Length: 113
Length: 114
Image (cartoon, rainbow over all chains, first blue to last red; front, top):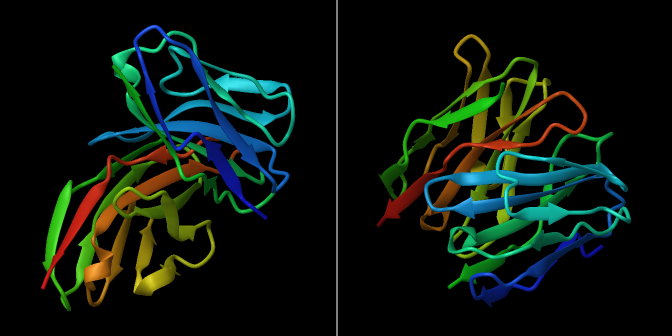
């Protein structure tokens, strides 16, 4: 199993550009989520999904869109990048029927200039 | 509503001395609690978890934590620090409802000096 994979590892955007951060898992987990990590803030939930076709907002959803067309993939879209979105983004997944442990991807470091 | 407070943003210890990282939580339901570790420029690794079984939880690398409901605490300890323990540690809470997300504390940076 590859676990949770994220691409790209690093990305630099200009203000106003759009892009999609990719996340995939091969563990057949129903639950997937996106977090952003900023210094001194811990990780904050952006969006999450409890299954294909179902998504919901987390603590900091503004400026981000998600969709869940398959169990495996949960892409995060930045519609119009802003410097405030400079952060490290982590995708995670878990089995809803299991022990609540979430498995994290390696992260994507995004810089918006 | 759930919340997590890590009482120290930075803890410094000497190699071979005990480690104590403090965490208090707030939860409306029976919580699951976790400690994650993040080494510099790395992803998150689960150290240990409490999910309503034994209140003293043992994790990897000699770490353990005790769930104290009366004090709403879940402090992380290790008897003897090692240089490789230097990292950022996150206390995390999740409620026992399907689909409920993880709530992270702001993190404690552990420094270990020789």
